Amino acid sequence: MTAPTRIDTRFADLKSEGRPALVTFLTAGDPDVETSRKILMGLPAAGADVIELGMPFSDPMADGPAIQASSQRALAAGMTLKKTLALVRDFRAKDKSTPIVLMGYYNPIYSYGSEPFLDDAKAAGVDGLIVVDLPPEADDELCLPAMERGINFIRLATPTTDAKRLPQVLTNTSGFLYYVSITGITGGAAPVASDVHAQVARIKKSTQLPVAVGFGVRTPEQARAIGRGADGVVVGSALVNVIKDTLGNKGQGTNKTISGVLELVKSLAQALRKR
Image (cartoon, rainbow, N blue to C red; front, side, top):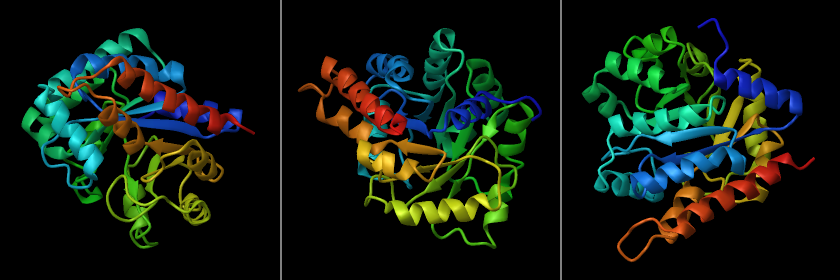
């Protein structure tokens, strides 16, 4: 890739502002397509700097109960990968600058067809991919073809990613590096800010990429503490839990679902903007 992507531009702009990015995660189609669309459209105004959109999958092995349940709700509501790309296309028609990263597993992409998926993702306005079960050893499968199309391929590093493994993780990674702040599944224990800052500093000795930190960040206070030593803070399970807690008696989205998610995003964004 030669030209800067939306992700590159967004992180560069935030660096000049002197603040970390708020990266929000939601599962596409959760709890239904229309509610999901309304939340997605409202995220930039609420303060989301980068949007991660989960590709619903029936066996999300790295995800905790909250995000697993969000995938199940989305699939039950009829969400598909094709509809996920349509959701991105609708968003991109109204927002030309906010980066969107699709996050998930390789199985749905493989079933779609890797090359057609990448072509359709690029046409829809997808800026990056996080595919948690594709290691660097399989770069030919999706990573390199994505990069050829100008789509960032973002990888995860964890507390167990040692000095020997880190160079492999960083190879062909672009956009940003997603640092998983705790071992285990999403939505687990809260990270310790000082530990996270030390790990981010270690990683940044080996790369110029921005480092965004996720897993276990739930509150504005936690986000602000983590953000003091990171280029971005990722919040997912907390937002997904708002959806779960505001559903109607038949499991449908309500006005409280949309407003609840966006209000939490606003409070997180405000915390990261405090000097």
